[in-house]
Length: 81
Image (cartoon, rainbow, N blue to C red):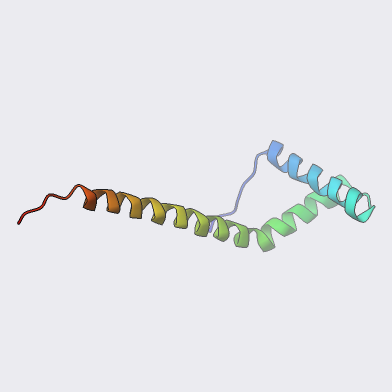
């Protein structure tokens, strides 16, 4: 798996969410540098789990659609008896 890259805007939004979470839930201020460091750690160490779950979910959707197409094809099959 290649590294997941986020835009500066996406990364800033995630950092803001981390900072807000720490303030709200832990009553701790999380500085910009620390929030970026934590985000980098979580992305590197846990990102693959979320990425793989997304692929798993996408695969399920794809398989369901293929099954529907397969059913539709069988439904229009002509009787050759």
